[in-house]
Length: 421
Image (cartoon, rainbow, N blue to C red; front, side):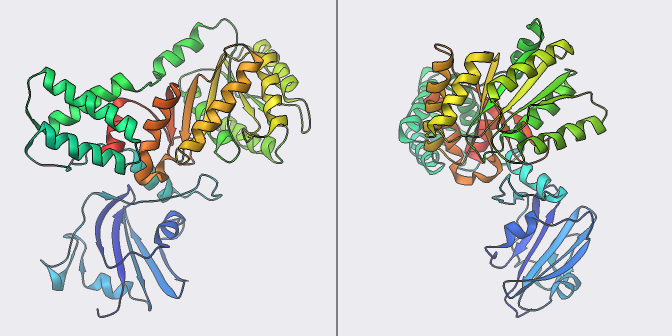
C-alpha cells in the first residue's frame, strides 16, 4: 500500500470508526451526496482521483486514491477490529468522532446518510469533555474556558459574561479547584440563567389557550430555509395533534407556492388533514394572509402557519410590505428564521425586521428565533450565543438538516454540548 490514499470507515449514524491519510477537501461534499439506499457500491472519478465506497450494513468503507484501491484495502483490513492486519498497533483509530459537513439547506437532493450524519453533529450526547483533566484552579479554569469560548466565536463581552458567572458560582461555594464534571454542570446552570430559551411546552400551551385559530408568521431574509422551517414546524405541531393550516403568502418568489404545495401534499399522503390557501403571485400578501386566517378559522383549524416572502432588511418596498402584513393581521406569534452562520449580519437583520414590525403595531417585536443550518456552523457555534444575548429574543428551535425531523428544541444542555464538544 505505497499509494498516497485516504481511507475512512464510518457508521451511517455519523460515527467515524477509522481513518487514515490526508482527507481531500472535496470528500465531505461527496459523502453528503452519497445514496447508500440505492447504491451499495460505487467507483467514481473526482478531481483526477478514484473515489470508491462500499456499504456493508450500517458501515461504510470509502477510499480516495489515484487508482482503484478499495478492494485491496478491504482485503488487508480487519473489519471487526477496525485496523489493518499488517499494521496492528501503528494505525491510528479514531473512534466516535463526528464527520464535519458544511451542507447547505438549499441542496436539492438530501439522502438518508447525509441527513443522519449532519443531524448527528448537533446531537452530541455522550462525548468526553477534554479541555482539561483532573481538577484545576479557578485561575486556570478562567483562562482555559475564556480562550475556548473565543475560539468558538463567542464575543469577548459575552465570553467574559459567561466565565465570570461560572467563576462566581464556584467562589460562592468556596470551591478553589474544579473537575470537568463540576465545570460542565456550572456552565449549564449559567447558560440557563443568561440565555433566553423559549420553552416548547409554553409555546404549545399558548396555542391551546387561544380561542379560535392561532396565527404564526414566519419572517426573515431570503435563502435561509424559511419555507422548509415552516414545514418542520407543521410536522411538529401535527405530531402534537393540532389541526394545521398553511398560508402561501410569499407572492413574490417564483416557485414559493409550489414548494409549499409539495409539503402539504406529503402531509396529506401521510394521513394528515392539512389545510392550504394561496392567493397567487403578485397579489397583496397582507390581504392573502387575512383571507387565509378567516378560512382557517371557519374550517376549525387550531393553528395557521403564514409563509412570507424572504426579504433583505435593506429593501424598503418589501419591508414596508411586511409592515402592512403585520398591521392588518396582528399575528399571535412572529418567528424570525435566520442562518446560524451569519452572526453579526443576522443581528442587523433582526433589528431592522423589528423596526418595521413595530411600525405595523406599536412595540410589536419578533417573539422567537429559529436558526437553520446549524450542522454547518463548526467553530462558529458561538454565534448562537452572541445572537440570543444581544437581541434578548429566545430561540425556539435549531434546524439541523433538510428533513422534517431535523429540528431540535433548545435547552442549556444542547447549548453546552455545542460550545464544548
